[in-house]
Image 1 (tube, rainbow over the protein chains, first blue to last red):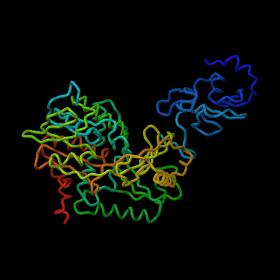
Image 2 (cartoon, chains in turn cyan, yellow):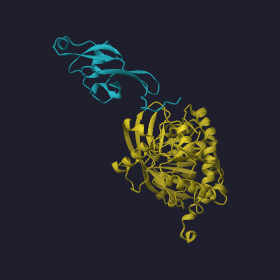
Image 3 (cartoon, rainbow over the protein chains, first blue to last red):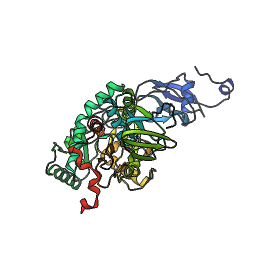
Image 4 (cartoon, chains in turn cyan, orange):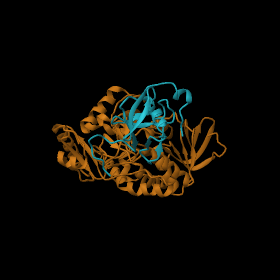
Length: 106
Length: 377
């Protein structure tokens, strides 16, 4: 769906290792988490809390809050505002986050 | 009132399109009356867009037993009312009414709470209801995640909560569906009684109406005297903190914390005398947050999405003002600070009485006569 521009792909940026939903991916140093998801071929990064429909990064500048992901265990992080780091653990977020340590009621 | 479809006259004009005016207008239109609902614009002070969304009985009526009875009547009719709104409009207000908690964070607080509720229920003529005093273990069984400081709670089954914004929308949709005429951008500046009814003025436009209902919230203070009524209401600020949406962890509303049907956590119930000032302040917000964290420590990890303040419509003694003008019969005033709780009573009970021209003995105590110096002496 999204392809990296040839001049960016050939720019020689360092490659980092991250995991997305438990699978290893390469990421470019300097990219945001949202750009990393796109580069990994993952246009959707979460499902919404109320209706459960998929959402993906949209504004890429911190405004729309559609790119929320779990980063290193922290839920509801704006993927477009966080720079990817080596060893980062990224998970796509399913619905609303949990209150830590509190049982979900049905 | 500059619209082409603006009627020249109606049977009943309701002034104020918030939860109070909306509920009465919906009730009147459902009853087949020819009703116009005159609403201000977006600049209006809108308690209806800033409230917390509780249907709340416990603790109400100390000092005025008929307020306790009226509140219970409305709470009991809420399930039926929510069903009616759903049938009429397809809008689900997400009423959950399986009881609510008042949490106490010290033995002294609990003792004070229980004695207040006993005094409330022991008033002569009070329509009694059951309340349970719960210890820590009983609370923890129903509210997972409570903090170590929670020592007890009072619980009543009539309490509940709903989505107040959807309620406002449903009242308007229901009103329109029953043929009501909604007139936005129509702030009523002048009410003039005439031989057979009233003339309402908004800007260059006028509307004649046989009956009028003043439900303009804080605006009632200046409108009421023009129709021989008295509604000395003042703003009382309430601030609310809105957290991220989280998976459902809270199955019951607490007076100060609730989780909406869509997962949002709301924290509220502050009361300040701040005039017409709708701004939030960190001192009050910090107090609200700290108390909520003592009840649910795990919320410390959940972020704040937004905060807001809104103005309650408060009478001198905190009770509603319902009255019909003695000087100009056919002019009614209705105001309260519990637009959600009382919406069922306003639509299903009060509206038919207004249509019939008699408010009824069970709400006689809500007359503004109680504020007259002679009565207080």
